[in-house]
Length: 544
Image (cartoon, rainbow, N blue to C red; front, side, top):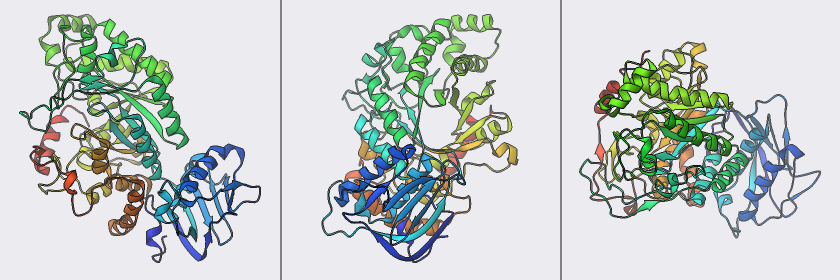
């Protein structure tokens, strides 16, 4: 357990064991590092992390001050860190565990270690400690929406670094939606030529909110994607892409109208919210999205590939004679079955390629292949239903970990959406819902926080929405179920100095700074009772 004399030296995750010893290890020009060849990448990363602020050479040597190694008695993401006045030894069950041990080592140093140029007058010393730690969940993630507002490549790389700092290991990358298509598909270039930008964006969350009159867009080339995926892998972050279907597709319909019901020309959508324009279910449209997925599979080595499946209004299918004819040809009687048929076709294609389909909990309304993984966002109903039916689950309930939701009841919160989610609310998140048997609970892979960007038009705003709440999510996903928020809040106060050194524009405990506010831009706040009633209506079709 943590020695109360040194509460400020760690934040997330909370170690299983933490003991302090006498003395400290001081870094100097003679400090050296070593690691066996399988850990060469981790060693290089540690050198790059330590050198800018310290200005030390940190050369490699056989008998080193800081030694990295592997241990057979630890799990793949577990680590053991021992610091004495003479040396520091970090061992892990795998390279990921050693990397997390290195992150813990950095957190034991002064916060100035995160600055990117030499810090004058700073003494670099690591307290003598012994830490053994490992994560509770294998999926510890964040969903980043770059479709509503594009995030430039260097900011995505920065976000990955911040994830790695907090020992998060999965970036769910929301790449396509009604408002933009962000990944280059060489077979269908108009997806980014046309679908990669819109003529304006809605400002505010109300139905009558105006547009800003300013074009918005951007996309990632395939070389950009490969760079981002490789950069993330070096930090033990898996990038899980998401290509939305059969709803949330108007950017694709603007590029290729023949994909839509009726085939009429459309613009890339400029409004927020659910859009009635969806894909048709012709075999050619299934083939189009299978082609897209083939290129996505080539870019992303992730075991999981996201296909969306959420918020798909079916009124166009119901009202379209050709779609009704198609349903008859397929032997289907309900539009819900048609969506399940479409998702199953994509699932079959992914399974044949050795991948697993990842989709939002709406897809539970139909029959799914055994390997499907569910992102349970409409509360925990989807998590319970999926686990009981034998599907793996990533819990991301909106009323606990949607980080675009407002952070307090204060009128100063920028574009306040839905219910308030404080740091304390998010810290209470547990991905395993009540009522599951031990066998069912094993289907809960972990959880993630979701960062939707309708109202986050810059990386600065993403910072404000994500931090420090994402710090709380990281600890909830790593640490044992029994946690102490008072202890976390005490440690968080010190951790904010690290975020300061990194230039993270987080929300301060006393509220938004003047330039983080959006005066006069209307939001859409709800009470918890209103939100709960709305979600209950949405999940009525999911059988528990």
